[in-house]
Image (cartoon, rainbow, N blue to C red; front, side, top):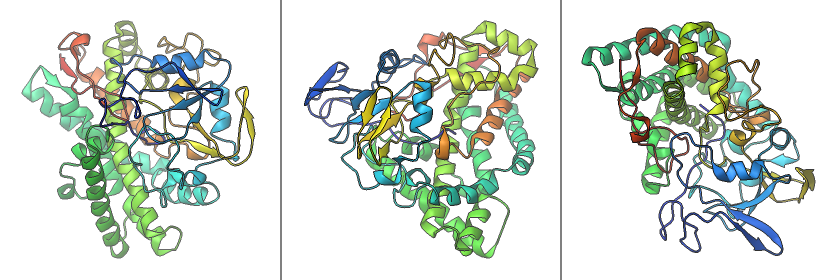
Length: 432
């Protein structure tokens, strides 16, 4: 579960990552508009966990860059250096609310995942603070203590079944897919008989570049399911997330559309993001045998290792939702004018060499890791505690149960998802 869901894009002229005007994929050199260089970011699918060369080039520049992506007609500014990202995502002069009626702003998506007029991601303080305070009631330390043994039992049961069937086995099918969906459905309080094919829907929703209409249909289906659950919770109160949101609607703290939007965001992001993030962690360990061996020998390093993997893995494609400058603001060597959009790349900030020496290396000895994989500022991911817990359970349980766990095929033969918000393997076949 990571912050700021947004999506990859498709066009009808030249494939899923073509330039919307020319249909030419792979354009990365600057174009010029009224004397200002505008870099077109084609959002091409990248191999495995390769760091995006477009972001790498922007990190090496001294100024922030003006960019254009496949959708929208206006350009925006891309911020990549750690301190600039922290500033852009915490300065109240940059607004998400101001983005609501700005369809011309460049984007990697043909449509937003969240309903703009009721979503956390398109709200500013103080309303944002009020909405977050409601949803945070389901993400307390006490809630995590309640969920952790349930999550551990789920992981054990899934791996029991996988072990019974024998190797080779696909971890995406047996663990990374069903585990986070079960955990987030338990958090929400969604009955088992209503969970159905939610994993498939979550994956389709978060990859609209492949099938935009199916993505919209998936969103509608999930929202209807959640709306029905929240209505039932008004007369049948519980202490799960659905119960918390339903009670907040009754108390007048949030609206009904806001409650549906909040629950949908948690369910879809929790099922999809953790699925891919945890798979990326296991892949990184299986392809870095020295770090894997050390973690087996020093299991107490697990929390530190998870944080370092969160920093290292380029878990998403492109960049998330921008903010709009409410006045002229100087940042990263340029002045962002009032009304202009600024995008902050968290995965680029996690590779800033001024903050993280040797950023392209996995190093479990970095000490406290101030990565921004869960975002920063008022929009920091409310589910970060849950996501960390799930990742720790997955990695620890796999290493404990399967001391000889390894990939069943050469790493270069694995296939990776295309056009997806969160990067990850389509399959992760292993033997033990």
